[in-house]
Image (cartoon, rainbow, N blue to C red):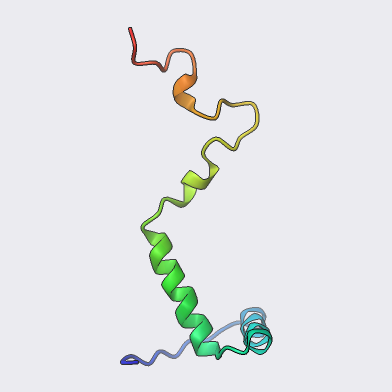
Length: 72
């Protein structure tokens, strides 16, 4: 590792981190590094797209709505 980072955590987050480390047998630092790596990977995605087609009453593909067709 080439960079050291010091952060302050609230009680709830610190408790979660400690419990997760104890349960999994991983170090707290490793858990934080893995979570940061996942956050970095997810940044490239569009998180709102997970909701596409999931609202009840709407068509799964909004392009099927009347008036949205590009066909003449």
